[in-house]
Image (cartoon, rainbow, N blue to C red; front, side, top):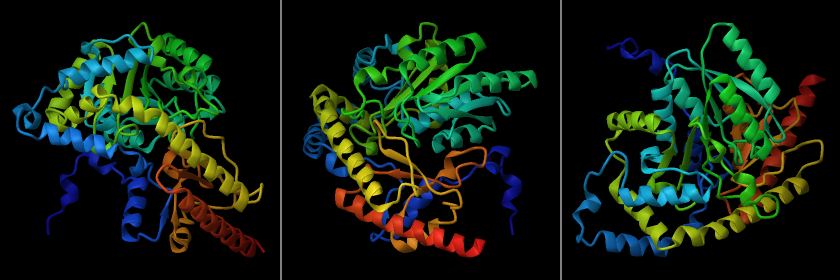
Length: 414
């Protein structure tokens, strides 16, 4: 029998499966389970008729390049359209700064492979996005978490951690942030704090990786376009690597996202991408471009904000109805897909998964988003995909599970 373990690289030995993907597997096994686990867009928001018409025209055979290999950098008209999106977000950019990627996760992988050596330090929000944890872990970087306040990263803690790490002779390369409606907490970094973070990065010679997939999904009762201005918009020195995506606004199945960064960085990301996939799918890019050119994206955005705001409201109302005040708390999501719920301290949400699945509801345990072993009594609830009815029913099931856990805990403690 072959000992395959002896063939694995050091990086392979540190790879871990995604907790979110594991929950997706559970969902696939039973359609009776109500899922608050993966942050999937709602399929009923997809512009199906527009996509159908676009695909019919693109696949007519009149243009052979639709199904051909394309440039690594991306489809030129789409790059120009993305430059227009960035300008609308307050960022002055050019084609030399832009690279289209096969989803934002590829962008994170390229950033990790190009910027980080084994044992380099990445500072991350605590908690942080699991996909970033995976990308940084795969290149054997060291992640150190920085606690968050109500408006994002604690700047005093950030600087103290940086100085301690540098004082130990270690190299801090990157600060990774999700400023808008962070996955998993839903937090929004304040505008003043964004400017202070940029200034801090300049003083300490650190690059900021700004991951911004939820920017357009602000809720009009609590946030505005002014609140979601990218850190990159004030980046005159080329210190910010900005990632964004069409997955949450058009459809994730097309796997079209982009990086906007200083030209020397983007050129190196492009070389790394050539080793991964040569080019993002030509058909996917053409569909996205046509959706932008025809105004589909512009029409979608207010629909999405209204749709997800309503679902947020339903989940909040259900939590208030089903739980006692001392059983659950959460920061109010001002946009995005997620609600970050803290349960009583005696509950271990990882251990509670089995009971929850048996009751017909799933979530992602908070520990999946912590790199320091924290989050044992926290859950991430995605309200984006389930219907209003399923949200109410699922929260009711979850409340029953929590009360069972509390009863068991009380019995054990006696």
